Structures are given as structure tokens and as C-alpha cells.
Length: 459
Image (cartoon, rainbow, N blue to C red):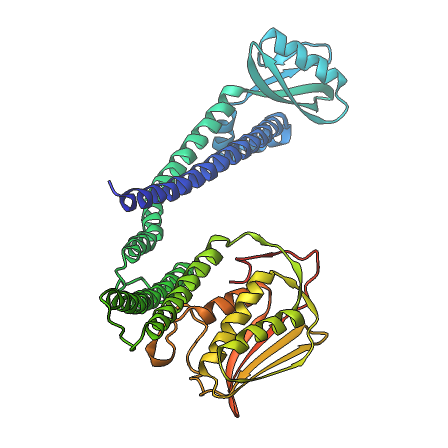
């Protein structure tokens, strides 16, 4: 079974079980609340019935009126079926009804202590609860006590009947709710399943994969984000393929030249006419090859150290720029100009040197006669501007991109390495045309000794 065949089903069942647990929890809470409410309501109704029957059966005026009202009389008769009556005198003599001796004694003691006209009581006889009321009344001028009582079986029967009927109703409603719950869980997981399968296809570089973009909810936003990632990956994949093809060609060309010249010299033939000229060609091509290999290794190095804290050391930019200019002056008959001062900055000296070297190397390659380097230190940070009077560049191209194509369609990693290093130091680098050439401008912020930078903080 594949991964995508397992996880979505598990998620769907998790959602369904979660909804089921919510329904069951709510049902139990409702049942407990209903049972408590029913019990309380029945208790109140039992006492109300006891008092009602007690009042009508014990009131002489009402007793005389009941036969004249057959409907009321029938209702009182039905109520009295579950209510027992006991009438006794203050001396304990029972003049009406009967009850267990233990219950009779308790009623008699409580009647003697009762101060109100009517009072409610509850007791337990042989494990059975008894609810009763005692009313003080007069009959023929004598004080009597009317006790109306009902056993718990009556109350329990009412509670059980109502509780089970409500339980069955809630159970049916819960079962019926599981059907839309299952449907909803499937609807929630369906787009996730589609996106999971789409991501699996994208991971296999099937760039034409379609995602559910029509949704307007959070899943639709996620699908659109994945689709944007798909498009970006597709562009990078195409650019990477072109990069590999062109880099392999750029590496292959100097290698072929070196091998061809070496074989010719071995055969006693000098392609340039003499040994010195042929050796210079070999050395030049070897330098080109070395430059490309060094750039590739340096990009790999930056990726390898991604996420690690960068060590900050003081860098004397004035001295560093002067040393680089003195070294690059030997590579051509160009006029160099250095103005301003930058002072010190905190950073990785080796990385800053590589960034400046790459820009100066490009300036020498395209400059016609002059290269100008300007240094400036302000409250906002440090600015370094490197200008050359070479041909203008296409500003619509992102020349700092890893897979950017330069002049004559050649690929290079120099400017990409520059941007990565400058961004690592919290700075910015821009490239643009001027009135008389091209300028690259660096800006580095002032960093503190306690400030920590990581290689993935700003990439």
C-alpha cells in the first residue's frame, strides 16, 4: 500500500471519530443533565401532588364540593391512586389509613415537632425512599394531622420512563448525525488527498499537475501556494538544466583546448608558433577552468554552512580595497581611481574579500579604460561603489540570480555569490547603468560585537 493510500484514510477516520466523540460527549452531558432535571422535576411534582391530594382530601369544604364536580373528582381519584393517606390525632391515635409502624412513628414524632402548617419530608424504610407531607388541620374543632405519602417506586418509575424515552430519542438523533459527520469528514479530507497526490507528482517533476485552485477557503489558499511553488520549481528546474548544460560546455571548452595544445606540443607542433605562446594559451584556459571550479565549490561551501552562526571579526575595508586594487592593476592597462574612506566593519573577512574580488573581476573584464572605487562611511552604514566605463547591462535581468545568463548567453555564479555574501552580512547590493558605464553599489549596516548572524537568516 502506498503512503497516499494510507494517511488520508487515517485522517478521515480521525475526523469522523472526533465528531463521534463530540456527539457522544454531548449526548452523555444532555442525558445526565436531563436525568438530574427530571429527577428534580419529579421530586417537585411528587411533593406538589402530595400537597394537592392532601389539601383536597383533607379540606371539608372541598370534600363537600368534589361530588358536584365529577371531572375534578375523577382527577383527584386518579392522583390519589399513587398517594396514601394517614390521619392521626395529637395523642397518636390513627383515625384514617394505615402505614408501616416505623413510618408511622416517624410521622408522629415529626408532626409533634412541626411548627408550620405544612412541611415536606423524606426518609428511607428498608432501603426504599418515602416522600411525604404533613399538614396540620382542624376537624370538628379538634386538631388533626394529615400525612400524605408516596413510595419511591412511583417516582423511580416516572424518572426511568422519561429518561429512557429521552435516551432513545437522543440515540436516534446521534446515529442520524453520524451520516453527515462521515460525509463532512470525507469532504474535508478529499482536497487534502488531491493535494497530497499532486505534491507526490510534483516531487517526480510532473510539472503539469493540476491542483484544486477553485476553493475559496484555507485549503484553496494552500493549493494556490503549492501551485506557486510548482511554477517556481518548474522555472528553476528548466534554468538548472540550462545551467548544467552551459556549465558543462564552459568546463568542456577549456579542457579541450588544454588537451589539444598539450597533445600538439607533445607532437612537436606549437599552435601559436612557439612554445611560449602555446604555454600561455594553456595557462589562460586553465585559469578560466579554475575560476569556474572555484565558484562552484564556493557556492557548495555557502550551502554547506547554511544555518550556522557566522563569526564576526573586524575588517579594515580601506586596507582590503587597496590591496585588491594593487593586485588587479597588474591585469590590464586601466586607470584606477580610489576615493573616500570606509574604516572598519564586522564580518567574515574571507567572504567580503571574495565578494569584492568577483565585482572587480567583472569590472576589469568589461571596462574600456577606467575603474572607479568610492568608499563612504555614514551613520546608516558603509557604502562601496565600483564603477567601470564598459557597456551597459540589461537592467530587466536579475543578474544576481543563481541561474542568470550573462552576456553572449554565458552562465556565471560570480554575482550570485556576491549577493549571498552581502545578504549574509545584513547588507544589500545593486547593479545598474550610469551615464558613462555600469556601477555596483554595496551597502553594509553597522554590526555590533554581540550580534549573531546565521547563513539562513536572510537567504
